[in-house]
Length: 332
Image (cartoon, rainbow, N blue to C red; front, side, top):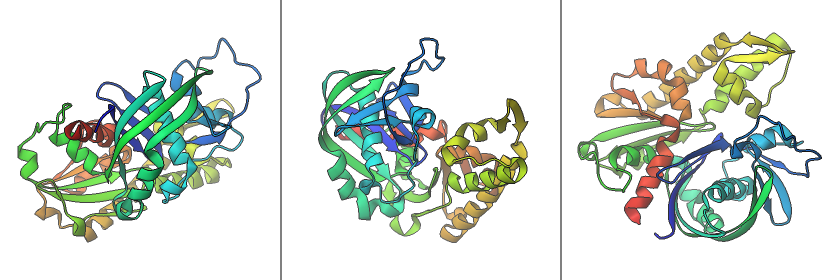
C-alpha cells in the first residue's frame, strides 16, 4: 500500500475516518445542493464539518449536518447495496477530501462492510472507490479543487476493525500478544446493522459470524412512533440523532424530557440482540465478547449485564475505523 494511509468507515448513520492523528465524524446524510442566498458572518456554525458540500460530475451536494439544515430533500440511505448507491461514493470522497493536504493527493485505504455483505459487494465497492477522482469540496463555503487517487483499498468485515484496534499499535505492529491467541466474539452495533463476528487466534470464523438488521434505526423507529403519539410531531431518523443523544426534544422553544422513551426503545432493542446472540453463540465458549460501535456504547448498560464475559471497548464509535487505519499501516 502506498500514499497517505487512512481508515474510513462509511456507516449507515455516520462516516468516520482516521489517519493516526485526527478523528473526523459527520452524519451519513446527502442532499441536493444549491447556491445559498446569504452567508451570515455571525453564524455560530464555525466547524468546517458544519458546512460541507461537494461538487461532483457537474452537481452540487450538501453533506452531513449541512444537508440536514439546508437541503430540501436530505437522505440517509439505508440500502444494503452500498456500491450501487451514489451517496456511498460522495461520502467517501468527502472524507478523503477533508484529509487531502495537497491538490493531487494519493491514499491507501482500509474500510469495512457488514459481515453478511462482504462476499457479495466487496469487489464492486473496490471498483467504485479505487482510482482517480476529481471534485471540489466546500469547507466554510469556499470551494477547493481535489484530485485524489486511491491506489489501494482493502475491505474487511466491519467488526474486525475493533479487533485490529485492540491488537495493533498505531504503527501496525502487534501490541497485545495475548489477544492474538484468544477466541473472541465481537458484537458491533451500528445504525442499520448489528454485526457478530468470532475470531479464533485472529482467524475469521465464518460459521459463527453473521449480520442482522437490529441496528439503532430499530430503536429510532420506536422513539419516532412514541414521540408522534405523545407530542403529535414527526421526526426523520437524521433529525433524531441529537434528540436521542440529549434525551430531550424542543417543541415551541420548550425542552421536553424523553429519557423514558429512549430507555424503553433501548431496552427492547437490547433484548432482541440478546436473543440473536444466544442463537448464534454459546458465550461460554468465548474468552471474551467485545461490544463495539456507537450503538454498542448506547446499549451497553442494557446488554453487558446479560453476559458474564462482555466488555465495552474504549472509544466504541471510533474503534472500527482506528483498527482499519492500523491494518493499513501493517500492510503498508
